[in-house]
Image 1 (tube, helix red, strand yellow):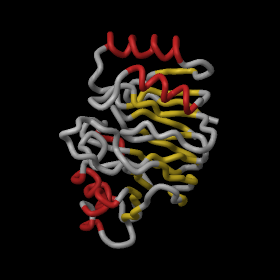
Image 2: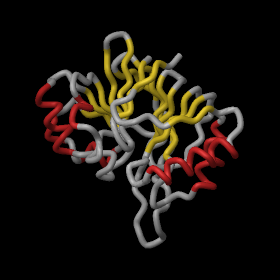
Image 3: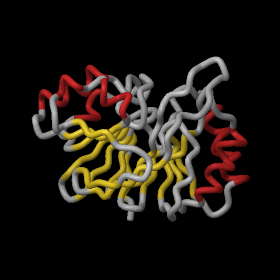
Length: 212
């Protein structure tokens, strides 16, 4: 399995000649959806979901399939029946050859005056977990955590405690577009200091790694 960071909250996973993309939003590189067989979307916020981009990708590839929560699926009805699948916590399915499990229900609280939206996380092949915008801990071992390192709804202490609770062997920075180089270095320092047993790394946009 190859994991490629595609900017902010988006990654591409490639295995056996097939490609799955998670959370292509407005900060995602334009080529993120090129050749994708399947797309997973955790929630409706613009940095994770851009409706026009998904519609264009679906028009370019009639075989493209999308899995997401109900709120996002309602915005994609124009793509056509049978191509957009609504899933929720506890569901399991196969997408582009990956075995996917769904965890969580709600986005983390941004502010008491801002309504919560739905959010689901995806575990793929029991190896990679993308939590979206929530600190959901899967009820199974995870080898690779995509760690949301910075957001209006989080603080560094929560991020490090979350990484420790998941206990993955590897963590790659996610949700990092709002951080300067100094901020990114600070997160790396705190994760190294407070999260034992997890190797942390930030991939640059377009950079990839091979996973077990």
